[in-house]
Image 1: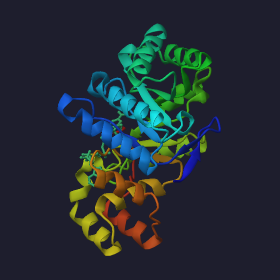
Image 2 (image 1 turned 30 degrees about the horizontal axis):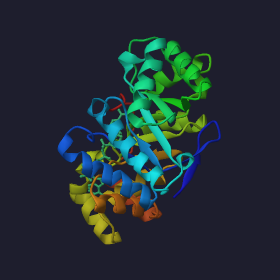
Image 3 (image 1 turned 90 degrees about the vertical axis):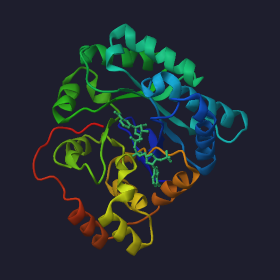
Image 4 (image 1 turned 180 degrees about the horizontal axis):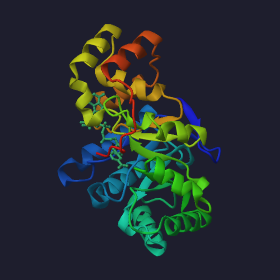
Amino acid sequence: MNHLALPSGTSVPTLGLGTWRMGESAASRRAEVAAIRLAIDLGYRLFDTAEMYGEGGAEEVLGQAVAEALRAGAVRRDELFIVSKVYPHNASRTGTAAACERSLQRLMLDHVDLYLLHWPGSHPLHDTVEAFERLRARGRIREWGVSNFDADDMAELWGLDGGTACATNQVYYSLAERGVEFDLLPRQRDRKVPLMAYSPLAQGELAAHPGLLSLAESIGVTPTQLALAWVLHQPGVIAIPKAVREAHLRENLAAATLKLGAAELAALDRLFPPPQRKTSLAMV
Ligand SMILES: NC(=O)c1ccc[n+]([C@@H]2O[C@H](COP(=O)([O-])OP(=O)(O)OC[C@H]3O[C@@H](n4cnc5c(N)ncnc54)[C@H](OP(=O)(O)O)[C@@H]3O)[C@@H](O)[C@H]2O)c1
């Protein structure tokens, strides 16, 4: 598994597992816990969740799987990198701390490794940053960052007192949505702030893209593996595909070792052209 460094120097794997749509129904909970348990056994170490997902249900699923893995001795806590997010409407100075405590309770953990503001909201950003810094001082979070911030939002953040401590910006980035390459991604690279790519498989839609399918066939991989390998090929990018099915978990892990050559990259650029102008940040 490749790793990259956050601005603090902390090393994180470039491939993680998303948990959106988990924890939404009691009927699927056991399978979701089992999927995350398997993911840990297979070598996944970074897990992304949010208080929003299943209104806390995804955090509970992740917490249960992590607790089982720790109990079984399958992994040590310090080998895992757990990411969660605060709702913008909770991201006031006091609300952020309270939301974080609720998340920690559901996760059954004493700290999260990275805590993100889910998207820009109406609470002043400096209040959220202050709350994050307090949580960090108290050891409840190790790092903080943001999500769904466009280039101008990042400029505002970096201009705040303490704003340059931001560890990452998690945004939609996939072959199907390359807008961030125009300015956001280069600016984050300049500042050595990794971009965390969510929905790197375009929520599974890329599996059925005809052009991608035939290119992938010619290389001997699946279209989703090609799509994921392409995201992971981008410098300074972490990808967090979500998968519950065992075959998907295994396929995605294998995609992290795929090396793409100039011919494949050029063919992908023809199928999914890079942006020629600024577009507003896409969100799913
Ligand atoms: N910050 C934000 O605002 C934000 C927004 C969206 C997402 N996220 C995070 O990013 C994560 C990933 O994004 P996402 O869940 O929207 O979409 P995604 O990862 O692009 O796609 C997930 C879908 O693709 C399927 N899939 C996974 N691996 C596959 C494979 N190898 N072949 C075929 N299909 C495959 C999954 O199926 P199975 O589950 O059935 O295996 C699932 O239906 C989320 O779970 C969440 O943690 C963050």
